Image (cartoon, rainbow, N blue to C red; front, top):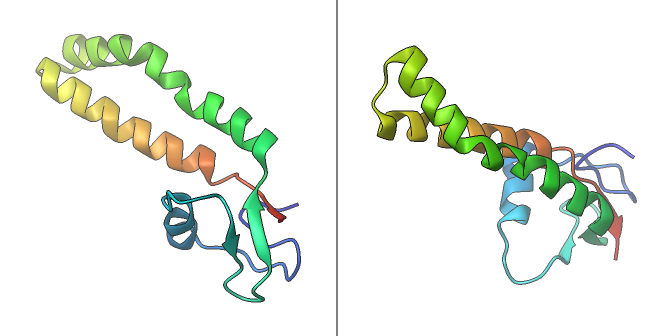
Length: 102
């Protein structure tokens, strides 16, 4: 199954639409924008994606230190650059999420 695609009508959510669904904090149930089918996130795949997305957090100190030493940035700028890279990485990884019918 393709990432961010409704299994019923094959409508593919754009990244902006996906982020709106992802940031909805109430529950994981939502309805397809195109056909109205009740959808949920694939829980097993979601756990794997979360673990992959969080891997860079274990190396945050090394990243910030590299930016500080090699690029000559202040430490706060190194952490800021790390946060930007981390957010881009997390969006890329979570963009591979799949939906299932609820």
